[in-house]
Image 1 (cartoon, rainbow, N blue to C red):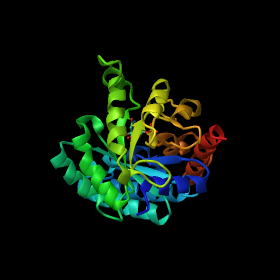
Image 2: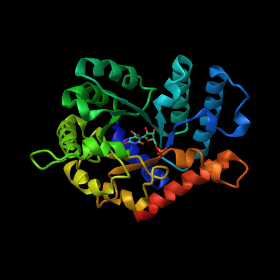
Image 3: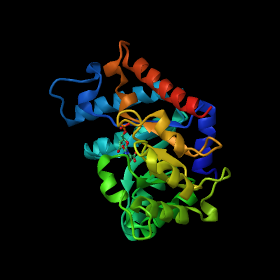
Image 4: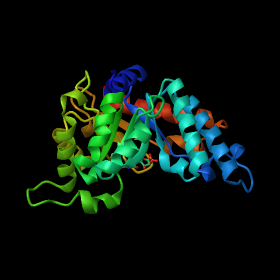
Length: 294
Ligand SMILES: O=C(O)c1cc(=O)[nH]c(=O)n1[C@@H]1O[C@H](COP(=O)(O)O)[C@@H](O)[C@H]1O
C-alpha cells in the first residue's frame, strides 16, 4: 500500500514546497457575491460549498495538500457534513492530498469508532488530526486502521495557541516538558515497522505550532520519524523563519499549513476576483517555504 507520507512527499516535490491550505470557511467572511441577505442555514451551507469549490480550484496548482476544518462544517450538522465529504472528493479529483482537521481521540474503544468513521472509506481524507493527550492506547485504533488503509495521522503535541503553554510547556520532575513527554509517546508508538513508509516517515505524525519556534528543535530531535503538521503560519503570527527548525537537514519533515491568511486574501487585495487573490496567496505561501528550503 502506498503510504500517506510517501504520497505527500511526492506531491510536495511536484508542487515545489511542502505546504497546505486550510479550509476554515466562515459564512460572514465569504465574498459578498456569495452571500445573501438573511440567509438560513441551508443557504449558508450552499454558499460555503460554492466558496470551497472555488478555493480548491484556485489552490490546486500551487499546493500539494489542503486541510479541512471539520468544525466549520459540523456546525451545520448533517448538511454541513455531507458538503464536507463532497468537497473532500472534489479535492482528491483535483489531485490534492486531503487532511481532515477533526482532532479526534478518546479512550481506545471510542477512538475505534472515530477511526472507522473517518479513515475506513478509501474516498475519505488521506489523513486526520488526533488528540495524543489521552495516551498511546487512545491513539492505537487510529494507527492500526491507518496502516491498513494507507492513511496518515497528526497527533497534537505542541499546539499553536497561547493557552497551550500553561499545560504543554510545564516541566516534569524528569526535566521534560509535558509537550516533550507527549512527543516521546508519539515517537514510540509511531516507530512500528508497519507504520514506516519508503521515505522513512511514520504514518503517525505530529502537530507542532509555527508559533513555538523555541520548542521545535527539541521536538524535531525527539520525533525523527514524524512528519510535522505546522499550523499557526500567517494569521497567528508564525513566519517562514519560525518554521525552519521543524525541517530536517534534508529539507523534509514538515508541512506548513495556513488557513485564514490564504482563504481570506481577497479581503486585503486590490484584485477584483476573489479566486485570483486566493491563488496568489497560495502561490506566495509556496514560494516563502520553497525559499527557506533552498
Ligand atoms: O490541527 C490544527 O490544524 C491546528 C493545530 C494547532 O495547534 N493550531 C491550529 O491553529 N490548528 C488549526 O489551524 C487552523 C488555523 O489556521 P490559521 O487560520 O492559519 O491561523 C484552524 O483550523 C485550527 O484549528
